[in-house]
Image (cartoon, rainbow, N blue to C red; front, side, top):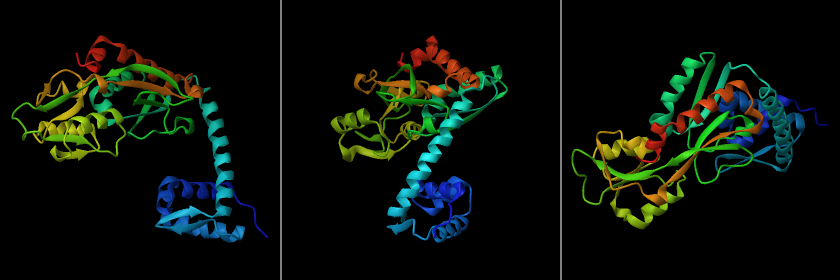
Length: 291
């Protein structure tokens, strides 16, 4: 006879399915790898069935495992939904706000805004997560997100912050090797930039590819080759020289995203308003547009 399965066991099963490995689940749950293994074995024995099979180094749910994953996912979604709604009722401008953005935006525009914000709201602690990956605001991976892209995802509330101009830059101190370029890795999603590079740059001329705009900026400043960079980032770099004007087909909208249930939370609303005001200032608008 199958025994009852506890919520902690369901969380374990869900974490393994989402991570694909025991090590990944252990990191998610804050447990040791061996603990996750022992708990999985105990859970399978209690249920009298195998929940996962090994396939090319990953843990893949069996038919029974997939059913339990579905149950766990439903319960996890319900718990997250209640927590999000409860958090949305918080009317005190205090606590932690989790913001996700890219290293480029933080370095080039957002960091001074956060410094000024902390002076105004010392009771609000900021947790900034740098990533190009789309975090799930519905599951509260973050409270606010600043992302560049053509269309913001539903059902998030999106505020357009402006349009990011991108231009060609090269080392200001000496000319790089003829036709040499520093490119953005294909692992980073930026379709317009990848199309432009494919149409205008021979693949053999790409001296270096990297998955960070800040790293591209550094490599271009060191003379490895020309690079396409956001104007707000590269125009202030005295080691770089802009070649021509911003490229129209590379202009990309910047969005501030928040889940509808979180928009009225005092601490989230305070940071959201501060970011909107900062991006609407003449200085930031001019830098975004490459003026």
